[in-house]
Amino acid sequence: MADGTPARVPSGAPDPSEYDHDGLDLYVQRQFAREDDALRRTRERAAAAGMPGIQLPPATARALQLLVRAAGVRRAVEVGTLAGYSAIWIARALPEGGKLVTLEINPEHAAVARRSLKDAGVADRVEVRVGDGAGLLDALGPDGSFDLVFVDADKERYTQYLGEAARLLRPGGLFVADNAFWKGQVLDPGGDEMAAVLDRFNRKVAADRRFDATILPVGDGLLVGVRR
Ligand code: DHB
Ligand code: MG
Image 1 (cartoon, rainbow, N blue to C red):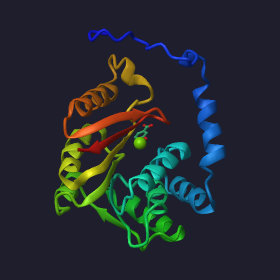
Image 2 (image 1 turned 180 degrees about the horizontal axis):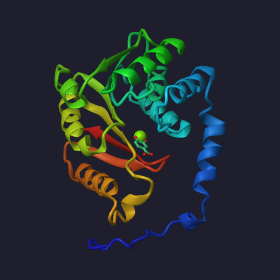
Image 3 (image 1 turned 45 degrees about the vertical axis):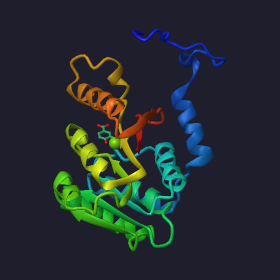
């Protein structure tokens, strides 16, 4: 690398290519991220409604949930409710009196999500707002009053959501984004437009002095930034 760091810094660990990442993700899921009936029904309800099965994998959802716990998140916002699957994981980690506002552009998806949130017993802690994510984020406030902004929506607007998160988060608050690896293709975006979008976004976050960030290599890559 240009700064003199070798491509792979020597360490005691074996070459990462020797790891069975998929098998290990399932291992984590089995040991730490088992779904209960409400989460299983949430996926089934989504499938029955013809919605895409692109909710967070359980091991990724569990990592997000523990970030919520570790950071003492009380006020959270999510962009991209879809079927409400990740909202349930987040809501279950909120303390008494905690609140999640989740934003969804598709009113039919929002309706399916509301049923699952109720079924999971977290409807009192979660508010689903229907509309354009950027506009709804812009209406939230006051500045610095949120502990978590989680984005898992239209990738082309992640950078815009990052700007809103910088405004909404208190110092120490978390910005989290799903799909930072874009199916592993950010390594070599080539002609894949979405991979190029995520690669540009990751580089932007890395250079953003408002956040200390990294990508946790769980699932499709969970980008985490701590607001300075
Ligand atoms: C896909 C997966 C995601 O997690 C997402 O947020 C959007 C799309 C996909 O696999 O296409
Ligand atoms: Mg996603």
